[in-house]
Length: 206
Image (cartoon, rainbow, N blue to C red; front, side):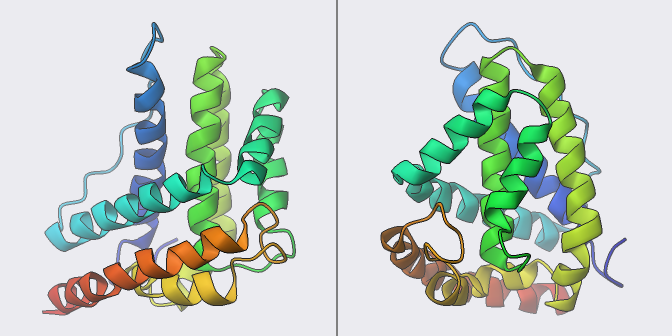
């Protein structure tokens, strides 16, 4: 399903596959690891939508760099990596959506974590598990997250809402694996992108 007049389903798919490719690229460049085959994404022909995908991907990269500095996050990812089958995705969902609440931050953490898990599976020479994780995440995204994204006004609002997410939602009580210091760091990151999000929205409706 998608929002009327938008491509939020397609944008979500493009962002997720892009995050996985980005994480896997780092490890395949470092050693003798065969490239991972991922399904082709539907081309995004709208220039502003592609700009939005690129901006969300960059935001996830920056947030991911901060998550990687948190020992609890790394411990969780290492534990999930040792599961080494598709059930690690559901264990990840249990951690990120521990109380069932959805917000932009948790969606972004989910996407980044799926990318990290995929890289670990590639290192373990388990490409089939990556395909399983991707399929499960896309299905979960469409069944559980897409309606919420549509109700929030679409992906365009993910950028400007990151500041609110960082202040109100990211804490050791809301997402157990992220420390308050990382949450505070997100305030600066998201604040610096909110103006760009507004400009993108103006371009989309003009």
